[in-house]
Length: 150
Image (cartoon, rainbow, N blue to C red; front, top):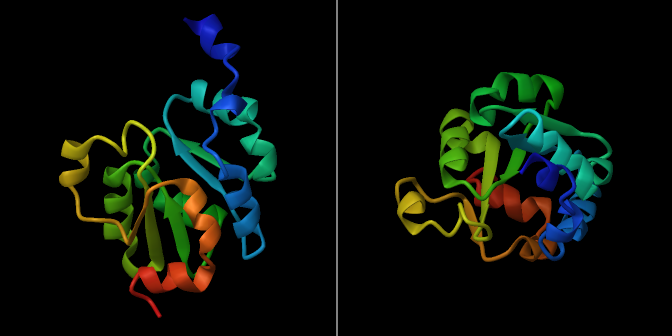
């Protein structure tokens, strides 16, 4: 199993338009991968998929990212953050902590996003989109307005 995961072609598993979305938002400000999970597997995934390079090495990986908000803010200070995540639990926890300081975006892609029972347990994010590529139609002002902060 380990050999399979180490040699898995992660770059072929990126969602359509995801790299274009990153490039789109890099024009407006700092973009960072904020991930959680296994301390060996997640960095490997980021590296092998090409995402680390796309994000210019701006990658944070934690066991539980929602518990590391002080560290995130210290490393990447900003007046406002946008978090795109397929786990509503994570979006809800960070929204609870940061309030209008963050816009939460929920793309309904991936097995976490499609688990209706899990999604229903939490308050709705600021924005829900059907696929990550839809963010190509948004700019920072639209995302800021979605957070309730004008």
